[in-house]
Length: 602
Image (cartoon, rainbow, N blue to C red; front, side, top):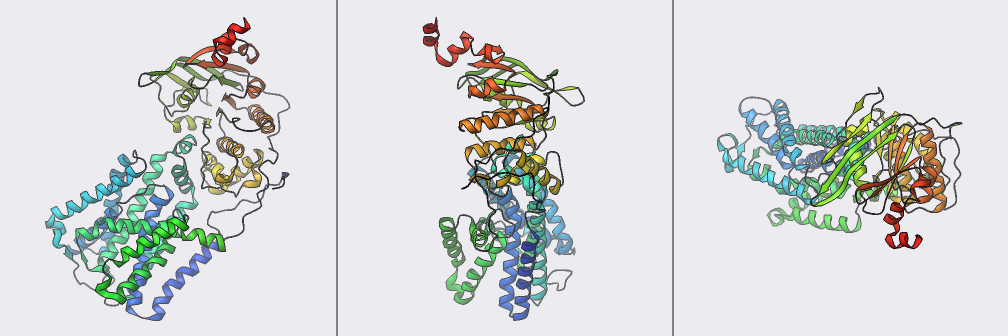
């Protein structure tokens, strides 16, 4: 790749991650899917398309939680079953299922929040296993309360025909309702993904701690997602019960149903707006046609078909069918240029602002992990407009201190106070509290949102100040060009070098417009040329009025940047002062090089 020279022109920002051309193409596809069965006029073909619409809608609803938020629920049939039973039971009481579906959705939202809030503490497969356990609980409850649910016998739908009851002799009205529900599910999914909530969900899925550092309330956004997903699933469950005319616990609270719902999104393209529809459009006709042609001989064949396709997709198309479609029909990627392009640091101020009063004070910080005393009575302060270097050998407790300075760890004793913009002192507790008061941080191990573009990564930080997507996008692009990331705005973060990722993380934090910046080894692993550029960039950030605490092992950077240096060793402060004085301190030399070196000097 050739070197790219940056100019001062910032291209016009895109207004949405789902452009007008793609929206038009989706609209044309949906209209074609609706027109085809009506034009054919065959009842079986209409049934296939109704099934496609139902499962595509269910999978789209699941994708909001499983795709956007990364919470792989295998218990989503809970909400499908609640919607089905609410509609049927209320219909037996003379209440239209059009009202019953809202009752089912309301109950589903309550259940979803009650289940998900404790389960969000679980990681990896344990969350999925917990949702399966809750699904089994609801199936058993439905069997037990037979006076309401009919127990194992199930419930028949009263054959009250007409739009009021969602029961029809002809399949065309059911086709229209199923299509309408799919459109609603797609519209909700698109709205979420193209607004701040969608960016927050994807950021939470990719790197929860980095999202928290950017001020994202990760629990709140996931609860919103699961609530929307549960409500949509219940809506469709009510209609599907009317369409089937019979429900029973084993079918309504079925693990197989939950797996199918998730599978369409996985095969179509997890986390994409259209992926679930593509997956259902591909798989449902295969299984339904096989069952129609083979009859009873094909009992269970749909499961075999789904399993074979899933294996093939995982092996050969890890991004799903949408990955293939994007490769062949998507627009060409913009020229990225070389990642060694010069960093366009912000203009240095004509004169550095004077160092002011204390803006952050850490007092007597103690932290234990089991029997290990990681930090012991650590106290220091940061002044306005100052760069404070925090150095020490590996294992000295530096990152633990950073975690306490940003709310990721609660000290066993001691406190961290930050002076707010109004001059009052506050003691924030959570990462969100620290972000709100103007404390931003990077991480020792870089934490990009790998599946998002450079622009979208920085937008997550910009959303801390801007609610509107266009405003956040504009701020992100300005920050990207200032940080030398302009050529890669539309490149996925996973494609950047380590130096580019570190710059990206700083850019994401700077888009939050912090007053205090915590830098955790941002110069580790980069070459000398990039170190010099990074030093210039940090100085320009300081000159803009941001106070900085930097953990660093690159002594060139420590000496060039720091106004003061604090040295940690074995969790204790062993030296503090001007950089040139600290590096000559015998205790510091001993901590880094050992007693033998100190004795040899003597």
